[in-house]
Image 1 (cartoon, one colour):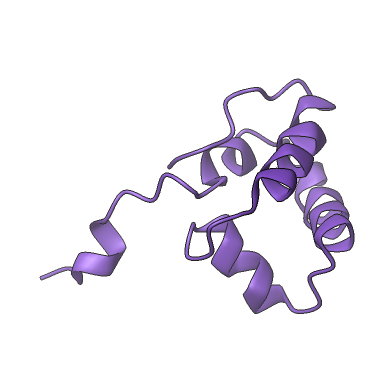
Image 2: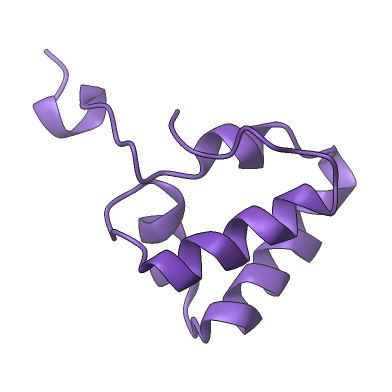
Length: 78
């Protein structure tokens, strides 16, 4: 049986946008988001990616802007 945490919809996840990236863009986008939000560990990044941390409005706008530069407008959710 799956753990409830795994199946729960996370509206604050930007996994939808991340999954639309081209293979070669993953590291670049991860680094850009980490630098822009002053995230220092990969675990902190993945907690945000998966919606375990609710972003501030300004952080959400930064994340949306990073994806928008790559033509990705549907960012939030799984």
